[in-house]
Image (cartoon, rainbow, N blue to C red):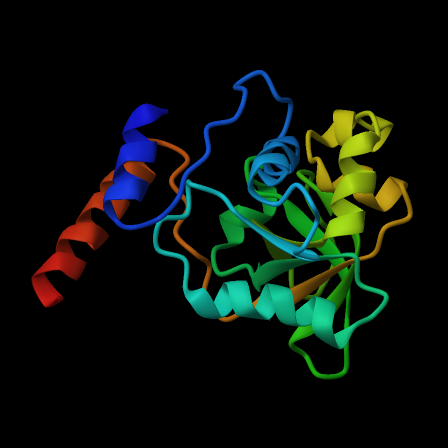
Length: 198
């Protein structure tokens, strides 16, 4: 909204308001790109959602690095190993079924789900930071919502159903995401702590 635009501009940034009726964050990115970069000069786009105010810039770099290191990677994202057993059964927390690479720091995403994952081994939690190759973003947003996307309410499944390759960087710590009033209170406390230290 206009308050966010004002805050971004006051901090020296540039903000673009998109149509609130656009169906997804990816569609909003495409609309902003049409205004910011109509000639397609940029071939990589990073989507950092506004509900992650304290994300470490290294997480963004890790996302973009996936595209540089893996030519077959169309979309980069991040995941973290569960730290709370309750996360395993929480439908509000998307999980990644992934093929972890030998480096232990990257993985090829095979599926995303809100369902419980059973069996031994780590459960990887997905966090909605994305790096897109521009052509992958164009292809993704041109397609209608897919059956799996609609079923799980996870738009990244549309990309997988289109045959796009998603890779994930392993983070050591989950970014704080503000999704409910309790999260907001934690975020406010963290902001106060940061101001006191800074």
